[in-house]
Length: 90
Image (cartoon, rainbow, N blue to C red; front, side, top):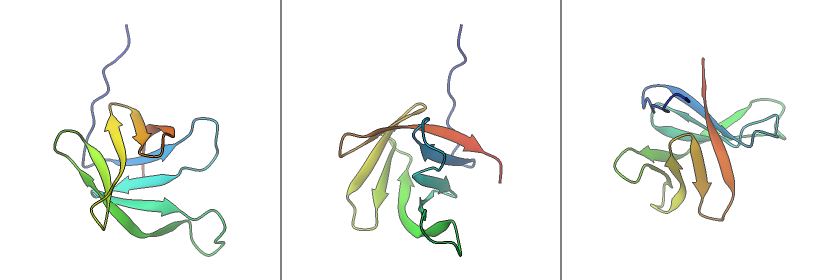
């Protein structure tokens, strides 16, 4: 029997492909940050969007466009990509 995934909006999560080393996004304090793979000075961008907690739970950019939908530990981007949601300790 597997444990049910419980989303904690106060926790910090990385959105990433399990086969990749680095995450695509980080969700922290209901803000979404992009991972800066090619910037040696820092790892994360300024916030690029927000986490919307109402159903369906989703990530929305500052223009109000949906970026991705969160369904338990699965994240589905509007462009068809799929990622996982991983809680991290910061």
